[in-house]
Length: 126
Ligand SMILES: [Zn+2]
Image 1 (cartoon, rainbow, N blue to C red):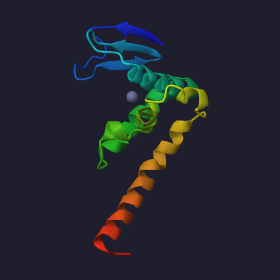
Image 2: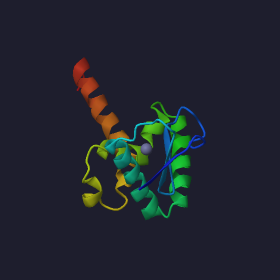
Image 3: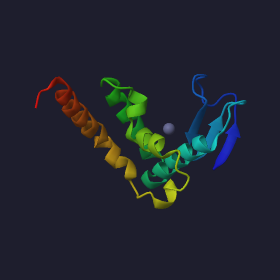
């Protein structure tokens, strides 16, 4: 992965780094950890399998749809969920299946169901 130090990318100061078409732009002074590199490598794998431009289109659409939902829109994006879940696994990309991010489109619903079920148990409803 090519890492480029830039004062101008990402454009917003609150973001430390951005992956554009497999090139990782980082503000000067930002620590680039193995975890961060692995996170961005997962995004690059997602981009490659989708043909880059569709990745950004889907990412943007999903982010906009999730803005109206209850949880944090950015962290709820399926691409981010896969990357955050596996960023601590250096060998993840070796065993990752193509389009693995797709299962994270639904994963939240499964979690919510479990949470609801637990809440019911907590309240004694069943
Ligand atoms: Zn990410």
